[in-house]
Image (cartoon, rainbow, N blue to C red):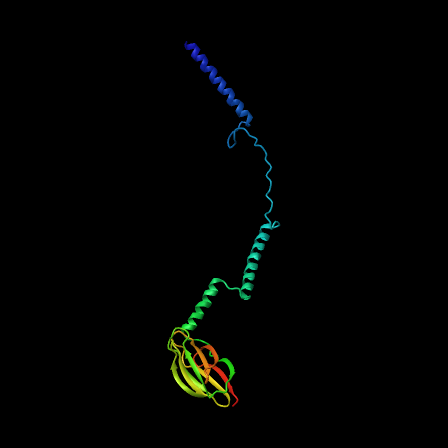
Length: 220
């Protein structure tokens, strides 16, 4: 048994020496600073990426067209606005402005011509009243630029007064002294001759200082 172990050990040592001798011969007998063996790596061709350019500008063209559409839409809306087409906000603003002017009495001072008539009577009788809700409207009545009825307050019911007629043109002016509490100065009136015939029936809406005028021609 001892001889067998000795023989096995001897074989192992001889085999190891032979292997190291072969490795030493393959590397020129000097392995210092060198790797054991060489390995070949597979060669792979690397393709250089193409330069990124702006030759394909489809995206930019699409974006530009969309922007042009938006600008055109705004231009169309502006043109419609200039043609007098109003949106809800504009209508509400104008309605508010109109009501504000009424509340604050800002009406244009415009005289009203209520017509010309004929009568050979000695006088006329004028009936007048506030045809809307009475709000303290006041007027002065003139005959040929001479005041004949001063500072009367228009009521819900008619008030009457007589004005003598002269040969020629008789100008009767109703001058608004105020616009009441709601504005404008409003009145309904009727004019009769001395025989009770109706000459005129009309109404006025006046700013403060404006006049409503009728003219009556008398030939004899």
